Image (cartoon, rainbow, N blue to C red; front, side):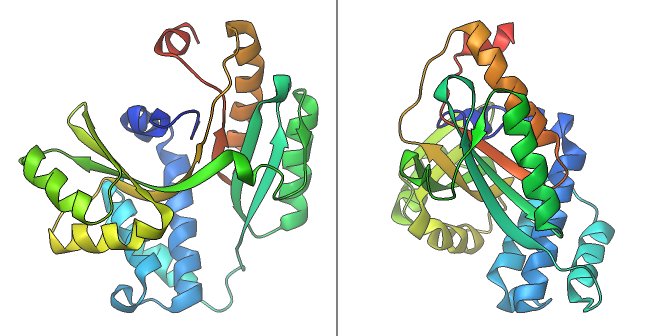
Length: 246
């Protein structure tokens, strides 16, 4: 699940990459397809496509799969995709923010609403939870032979507000408005991030007991399993001890 606290996605990135590789591939393919439909198939003149290809490489996606996604986006007869968000409260008032990409809005909204209802939540109006989250650029960069001090100096200059090293991966966050600058800096340094995305980071988090947290996680897991859903963010605190128990 994405966004349960500031570093949740980063700490679990490698595990998620293995456990949910097909889901990650599906999201990246959709990103590439939409990017091509919006601004064409040339990554040199399409920043969003460059980002999608970079994420595809970071996830070890085959070149042939990347090219098929580009071709699909360039095909005028392929189904139109649109991006949408859904907001609501889960059990115990936990805020849950959903990002999806779909070719059928009615199907997706019906499915997401049913998940909220089934697991003790309630879907609200779009915009009702925006004030609870900040949009941040989140980058993961394999350490490799990079010098940490030198890298930090370069990235701070490009707008990084947090840099940490865990499991030989640098986790970097930037304000949303600095996302493009950070991408340009990494390109200039010839550094290929493992992943780069805009994520919704909760401004504050709510702490629940283990049993209450289980109920919230059931809802989050059900939403995440939907093929149209890309990311699910929430404001529930998950301690390391709780993660082990769960």
